[in-house]
Length: 291
Image (cartoon, rainbow, N blue to C red; front, side, top):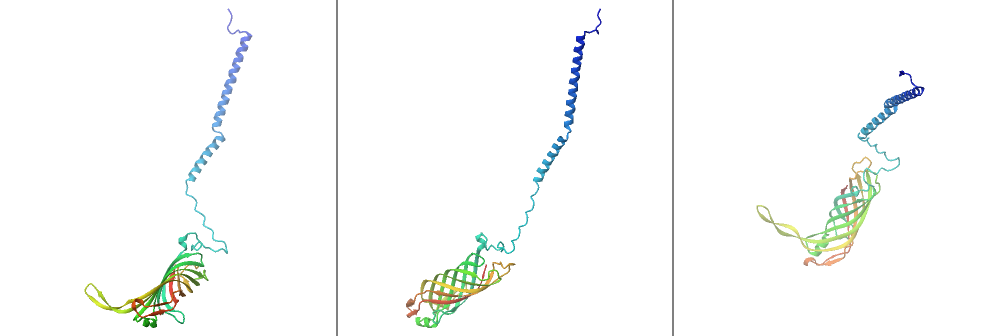
């Protein structure tokens, strides 16, 4: 009977080889597991976590309110600041200008066919710069007729009405000063109407009764349409404005107005023969405001 522990040398070598292979395999598996666990808590993993947190912080900061804009820098020394008043702006609304004035008229020349009276002017236009503006003006002049012409027509009274539409540049000589002097002038269309009046009875009625009064009424007239021009100057004072940039100005001016009216010899509405020489000259003196 043979003993089981007694093996041949070949079997013993085979068993020892198999045991050695199992030991090597077990050691390799342990090494791989240790490296995996170590990588789970390695610095690179911690760095990835920090990058993720930084990304979240960046997204939250992008939702914050934007920074306040930096204040605009002032104009360099020696450079004119023109943004406060719109004088050189591109917006046409800020360039618009208007005027209203009124005053008296004086006759001009040695021999005239118009005397004293009153007038008013309305105008509007655009500021081309702080120095130059161009205005379209409407003017109405109401003057008396000299007594010699009224007597020649055989009437009791009379007046001349002149209205005009003209284009008139205004040039400021001291545009940066609050006290300024300017020159102006222009030309356009003029209409002149000469009327003669008599005092005649006229009925007036109120809510309670009617009565008769006496008023001057036109009994004859003649008219003419012609071109004309005006030229003059004045003084203006700017109201307020830290840099003399106020758009409101009070002014006083005088102009010489000439109408190229024709010579007239007529019998207006059956009145006496009336002669008027060519040309009409008048000096309007105005006080007003521009803005």
